[in-house]
View 1 (cartoon, rainbow, N blue to C red):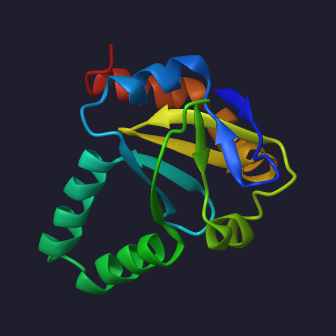
View 2: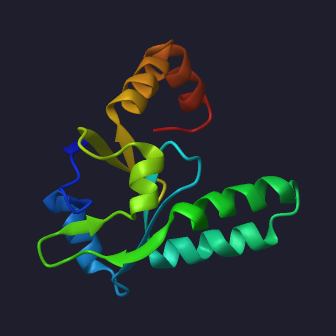
View 3: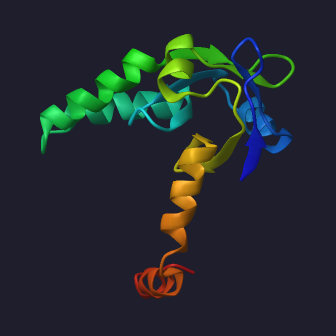
Length: 145
């Protein structure tokens, strides 16, 4: 978990470890969006393309897939990590999620980087703090090492 903040131009500087990850990718383009209109997500473009394919082929609930891909495309934009390790966020995404002029928390999860406002971070922290021993036992029984 890393602290972050958007600058006055809507760019976020990546921690060095995450910057190195993006620098190591063959394709440098990334996709910055939100699927749920509350948490921003930064995807390497190759992973985002896999998600687009998933949405295209998902048949269990086509309306859910259509709504989530709509959110992603409505708020998302392709960009690159600039020479100073910054990623730009679209104005639509910044406004919709209230990311401007606020401390943020970022972490890597499931092939993407999630960007949380302090409010969302505190909600997730509260939920994760409820019965962690039980949750851990359940996951270890399922194979977590």
